[in-house]
Figure 1 (cartoon, rainbow, N blue to C red):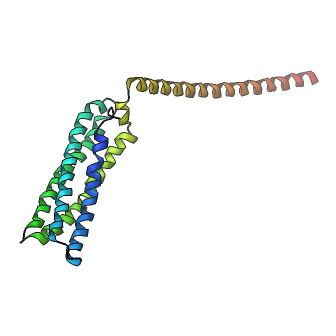
Figure 2 (spheres, one colour; figure 1 turned 30 degrees about the vertical axis):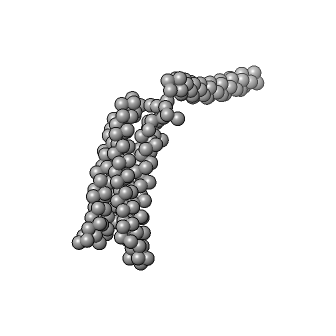
Figure 3 (tube, helix red, strand yellow; figure 1 turned 180 degrees about the vertical axis):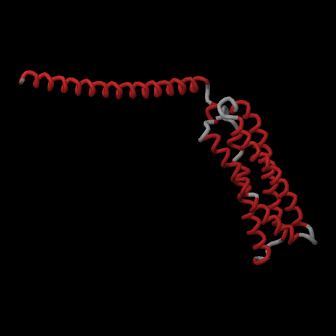
Length: 200
């Protein structure tokens, strides 16, 4: 288990927390207004935003550690696309955390809470983009191959060579069948000509 890269594991935390944050903020604002919950429950929003920031930062740092290995199997342009999308998330999360702290002020509490809800909803878009580009790295461009043991990589290469060999042999066989058909047609034409000469 511990031989696996940590980035794909840790990256799920900011994705979940970033998606949860606007929902939690909306519920607490509603609860404070309608159910007369104590305004102190807003601390949950700040706590989630803080953990969101820390987990996003950790995910980016772990991703940078994996970059050297992944570059051996994936084009640098594809990696940079995901890297740029991912590096944006800690800044967004940190901004949301700072905005959430405004919810504890007497003068700007209401505005800060509304701003947090709006900004956290908007921030879901780049969060999804970062997750999407990461998924493309793994499932479309084969980034996971970089972390395979050497014997597994060798086995995978051999399997690919065998498939290529079978494909080439398949085409050769089809060409052979075509040649056989051509020879059969030629023989039939030759027999017909021979029968005509015999009748004459």
